[in-house]
Length: 425
Image 1 (cartoon, rainbow, N blue to C red):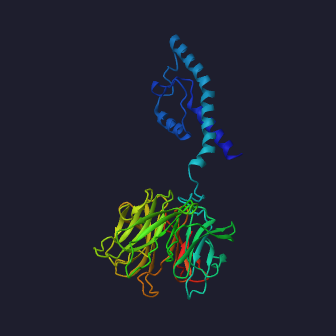
Image 2: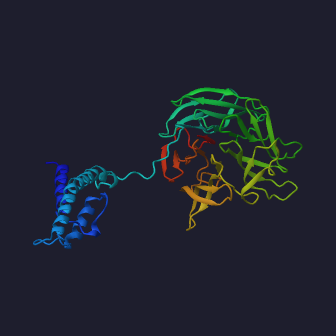
């Protein structure tokens, strides 16, 4: 006999015992059957154990008493099948449903949060520069680290930086030829991480050859530091140009002083542009250095007047090795040189509130290793299109895929060079 049959048999017997030929005391009467669990029925039997089994005299009953007893018996006869049916339904329901709502001891609990998965399987890096041995843009698998393809720069050009769009297959690259001329290219890859095309785009005014630039999420605009040639020994004011690659039209934001603008990154909606500003303070106090957030919706104009400073530091301060604005524009991720409580120097990826500049969390950390004249162990990182993962290159032959929600870091190999000067995901 199956367990279900056993339960049905026991429930039927229990229901029959609950109904007698005598009337039920008023305290236990109901006008309609009430659904109860088998455990509730057992408790009811326990509570009724002290109630007299009959409230009608057993012998010499009056005619009225006999009549009332007959009515009670008639009620009992139709109550029996109804109550049995209710109990059977409860037992069957309990047999089917209880295992679904009560975790079985031999089952593994459901995971509270699945690891983040990027919509972009591949990221790209620019090794560039003399001495690296790899004058190329490399396409890399974000899960395995494998280099799936690479593309050399066009003749006479040296790549300087890369930037990603929301489309996992479309990137932008800047390069320069000589000391002045600079160009921008659109790089497309396929679903297998193979290069499909590298084509020059219209930027109107030429990007500065220093390399730092950012492509908007939709790939329609490029933002880069304005050209800053020295004339008569004088530095021009710092600036950022935003160029529509469809038309070549540029919107110019110019500061009231010379300086450097680096680490440009967009919010997904294309409104805000984060950048770091190094203030040279020509003929005025150098008091504007820091991490800024530019509102690009205007027609251009004063760079700092259209921006808001998120974090400030003194002139000549180190700032961050890298900083990236999240897609929603509410958070900034930065590589910072810090110390542990015991004074041990470390390099960290930190999370900042874009509204207040307050440090919210430490996402990733490595002990400081001196790779030269620098205070950071690693320098380059990229944010995936979903703003859920960071790729951090450790400068020691590896890269870490960091889950922002959990801070879990997974190391992958980083072949063909160790320190890229630019990375995009």
